[in-house]
Image 1: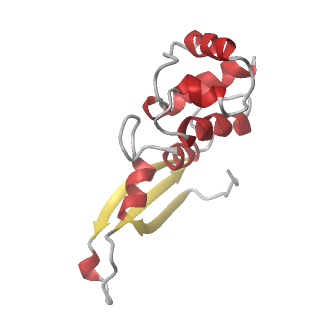
Image 2: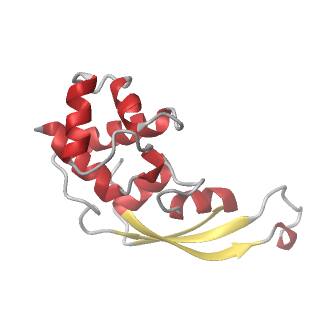
Length: 146
């Protein structure tokens, strides 16, 4: 959320962190980190680096990631801060339904109003945040901003 200006960024991180960054909706690794990075950049897992190539040997494997900065964010939204508030709320209590997560987040609106907006975007209020794509979060954000 800082707005760093790079065109391509290559880094080595713990393999599990890399998997979280490149994760897709509906997977165990998908979360706030996945969405935040994918909003600003196109992540690519370039290479897995086993712990055996390091001296001393670390406890974890590593991975090389390539992040290509997007010229424009991945989705068009009216309020970037609101997008990330909604994403964080949806993943704050991962096993809650989207409706319950938003209703308990302080984002505003009654449960009925939130359910109506969620349905208006073509989503099921009973779905879980971990199943929503960045585009669906953007659509929900724009609908809640109205």
